[in-house]
Amino acid sequence: MAASTMRCSVLAALLVMVCAGTAAAQGSTYGLGRTPTDEELHPWDEAIGPLGEGLPPGSGTAEQGAVVFQRRRCGECHGPTGAEGPAPRFVGPLQMETYPAGTAGHPGQNFPGRGISNFPFAPLIWSFINKAMPLNQRGYLTHDEIYSLTAYLLYLNGIVGETDLIDARALREIEMPNRDGYVPPPPWKPGMRQEEVK
Image 1 (cartoon, rainbow, N blue to C red):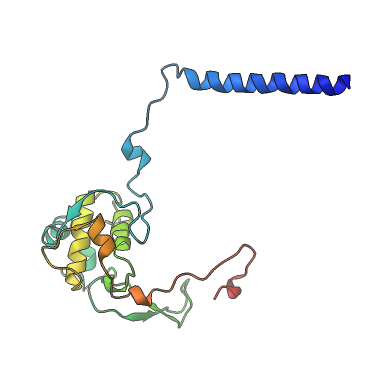
Image 2 (cartoon, helix red, strand yellow):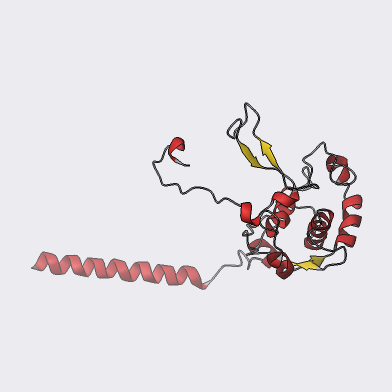
């Protein structure tokens, strides 16, 4: 009985010391550290959900996007109208492409092409431009420039008008041509082999 009481007393003393240490650690900062800025809490490459969750403030039109496309020299990789390449073309009809042999995909099987019309959700276009473009300077474009470029690409594909204002709300409401063709990834559980995921 005495050993049990002694153990409880030691545990209670340890618990008090841990709680007191935690309270003391939260008290003074000794002049070190600072409160993080909003930009640090929301980095430029923050995840954007397919339905627009996490889109930042900003807006743009296709007219403004045409200027950004020229000024930021997007045409050097994507062609003067976005349909020439050598980088993936993002202007053109909804189409299927075939995985070539030797790729990470499934050689010989079809997949939705890389054009803007093949995106199932418009906010994903904004997210892709934000995270990946320009290829050698990711994170360089402002939010308004990204909204403008998104509007421009949607306009070139006949999805929005040239003067339509595109912002987070408008992007969420756009019905993409391939929305019904979207196939979600198959369910996966730990331990499943790749052949089982179909």
